[in-house]
Image 1 (spheres, rainbow, N blue to C red):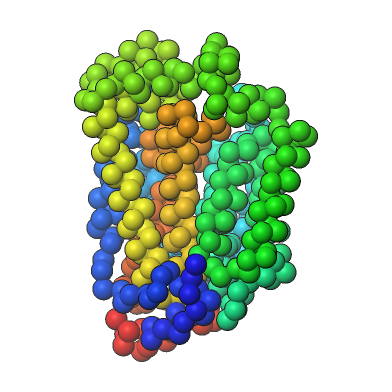
Image 2 (cartoon, helix red, strand yellow):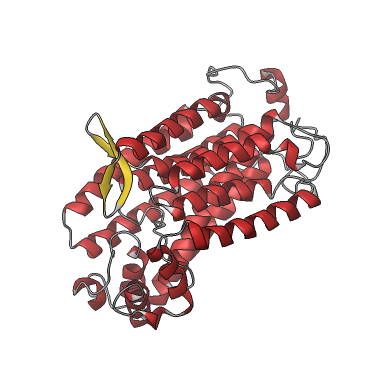
Length: 404
């Protein structure tokens, strides 16, 4: 929980704090983030080349990587976090409009209606919704500060906004992405003081809604995916095929793996969705436990540094935005890795910077770029740039200089 305090560096959310004390911003994490980002991007491209045998998916992903680099530097060096704060609700509205368009006239592929095509660009707005959920949650607590614990009545607007995102994504159908958006906001709320009775009510309501969803909302294939979590051999040739083949691929990699482009499950095409959902199975088969451990260390380092950036933030918006973006990256990695290892239902969550897909790839680049931007804001490097808009509660330049 975030503890109430008044800090000498003007932390502007009295009910918000990442730990007992927010430290002075004297540590530059930008180089670490850039290094980890570059290594994961390189590993992801090399792994995708093996998974697709260098076909058109790989070259399309190279283009995505190029555009992703542009967005990474744009959000890290050109757009200050205060601009995201100013336009957070506008961005939320824009993404919701795109999601509504998807439901109306979106492209259908594989039985799902998740894509729209505008000016020759085909994208999946639900991926942008993950970053948007983190953005509006941070903005909400920035503009609704309390000196005491939040009650449910104080959070109705936030619940309505996140609920709207869920309602617009769930019918696509895309339960996985809709659920991740809710979990991102929940992770941010976990760092805020909330009345215990409210938490009990939310937990009870969530349990009731889960029961209702099971009997009235989930499709049969979604139920089978959940049931296969407990017994993958229940339908080995159908709904359990993905999980079983993934486990075979991961297990056959042993300690050091079979070598680049030498994975039999991958190259003989036994492994389904090997360029998207099960891309990590390819990596584990070819590079074994040692390679998988490297990937775990890199993702772990990125999330640790992101939380350190949140700890050093000087205001509640950047602090909670960093928490939300960390939750986004962490949840995607953990859920995808758990899917591959048969520890979570197959819900179509991509592995950041590894899985093929333009919208998902670019959303991750935006998130990591925004974390760099927050780190540079913590160090005062953005204060020399003319602001995009004025925000109540920010310090003057003189105060900022004295605080560095």
